Amino acid sequence: MTTDNDVQVSVLGLGAMGSALAGALVKAGYSTTVWNRTSGKADDLVAQGGRSAATARDAVRAGQLVIACLLDHASVHEVLDPLSGDLAGRTLINVTTTTPEQSRNMAAWAADAGVAYLDGGIMAVPHMIGRPGASVLYSGSADVFQRYTSLLELWGTSTYFGADAGLASLYDLALLAGMYVMFAGFLHGAAMVAPAGVTAGEFAAMAAPWLTAMTGGFEGFAAVIDGGDYTVEGQQSLEFSSLDHLVAATAEQGISTEVVAMVQGLIQRQIDAGHGAEGFARIIESIKQPV
Ligand code: NDP
Image (cartoon, rainbow, N blue to C red; front, side):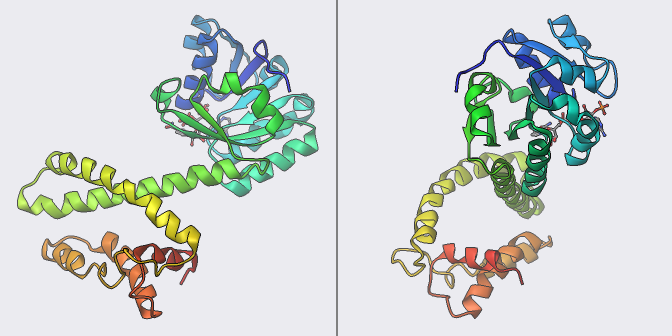
């Protein structure tokens, strides 16, 4: 597959993220047409060299490659369903956040319409686009990913996961799940020390290097899980990590035990099932089996 640096690109959706993506394309010299439901959001991009389309149909017709960065799955259908005939024969890269099933639904819709389809999940906030640290995950058409890799790299590091259009979204949301639970853990710790007069800032200064160091444990947990043997020697046992002290100290501080009780519940289910002497990674078995 050849690469294509002279492609006419259209961006649908000029919210915070769509504007950042379109801005990177305009700055790199791509011929870029933009459209937004509410007018007035294209002015800066036009001043930088982009073109504004009056309607989504005009934008689609102007671009061989169409980027959708709208609010959600429903808004993508709302904008694109009436335009399937115009999109036929073109390429659609949809970086709107959706669930994996919604991504697969969009891929099937695109296949029916004769549209080459790549789904994307953006692991960055708008001001990170085009800067170190930004990452975008893709799945769907391998041909589209290969053809437009140099364009996609303008936004951030691009990773392709395979032909199943739902995979990028699945990774995206799994990574966000890890992030939100970690954030809740940090905030729990901050709430714990607050009654002792410790500011959140003072706690953050201690928590950031600690949690960063603890991510070194992921690889060991992964090796145990992938090896399928939770009895491997050298691990901290579930009984040792029962979190009794942690939950008791939380209650002593007069704050909610919800965050730590959630982890304790996952541990307890494995202890109750007779696996108390096995390693901490075993709580993945509690997570895999909803109660
Ligand atoms: P914004 O809320 O800033 O913008 C939403 C965009 O969607 C606007 O252009 C809005 O148009 C448009 N829109 C909403 N509903 C409709 C509709 N029914 N028909 C047509 N257009 C519609 O969101 P962002 O730009 O921040 O996010 C866009 C996507 O990027 C989302 O899926 C988000 O999850 C994802 N993303 C965003 C990140 C971020 O940090 N911002 C990070 C990672 C992913 P209008 O201006 O007319 O309202």
